[in-house]
Image (cartoon, rainbow, N blue to C red; front, side):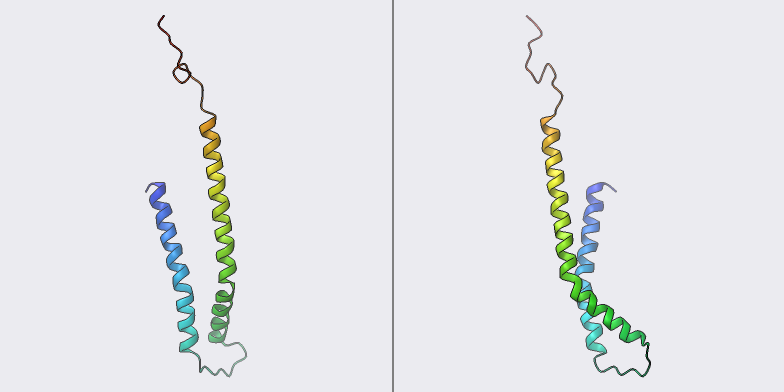
Length: 100
């Protein structure tokens, strides 16, 4: 698998997770809205609290991921420009005529 396909696969999986997380969290909260627990440590209440905290922190996670992606792209673009400028000088690139 080449690098471009791997990146596309990772990006697709990331998008699926980002779109599924709020949907599944809302489904969990809606399906157990009338939940009454008698225990002190209820697993269902813990799952609902976890999903609610994930939903609250999702904008911050997306903002930090976007900032990291922008920094990565800017760094790659800068490195690409620098590499283009530092090409090795050859006789052909300097247009030196070898035959008199």
